[in-house]
Structures are given as structure tokens and as C-alpha cells.
Length: 134
Image (cartoon, rainbow, N blue to C red; front, top):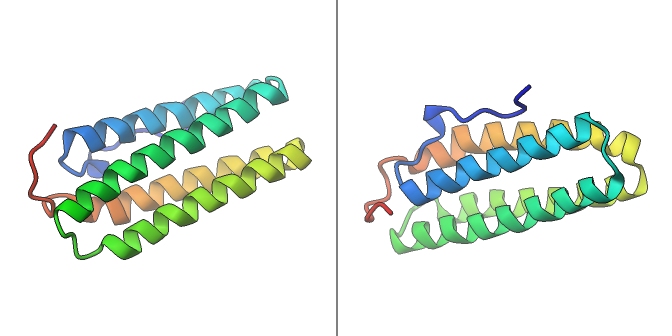
């Protein structure tokens, strides 16, 4: 079962950003499979670290693109990015302290955040950034 699925409305119209969005969804889905199959704690903690690093790198790309385009919603978009990174770090701590309760919370929060961010903040980028597509 797919935890998160790519939807056309998530597209921002910039190939490099859309590609990374798809990769993040795949990584979150792999984590979901890992959690569903109740793999070992070390494996799940590694996935969480990978997700945090991948998302952090993606946000740096997206923020650079927004700055280059003088995007007028840069600050609130960046603030939402920082909120997610903080939440992931908190969830990593919750999972480390209590894996049984940390797993459902992690699943719920990741799903909610991605769906909300893609459909709100990222969807606003579509057609607003006049830069070459990579």
C-alpha cells in the first residue's frame, strides 16, 4: 500500500523541484513500509535520518529558487519548511524514546504535513517562478 502518492496538483512546474518532491514521497513510502513491517529500530532510525537530510537539502534548493525569483511568499514558505524540520527532529526523539507510540504519530504527522504543504505552499509556486526549468 502506498502511504503518499504523487498528484499532479503537487507540481510546481520546475522539473528539478518536482523530481525531488517525487523522491521525497518515495522515501516516506519506504519508511512507511519499513514501519508497517516492523523492521528493527536501527533501520527505522536510519530512514528518519535519511528523510531529514533529504528534505533539508530539498528545502535549500526550493528556497534558493524562490529567492532567485524574488518570490513574494518566500518567508512564510521558508517558515513552514523550518517547522517540518523541527517536527521531524521531535518525532525522531519521540521514536527513540518510545517506538510503539512514536510510529503512529510519525505516520500521521508526515502524511498531514506533506499533503498540506504540497497542496498549499508548493501549489502557490506553480507559474509564479519565472526561471529556467532543469
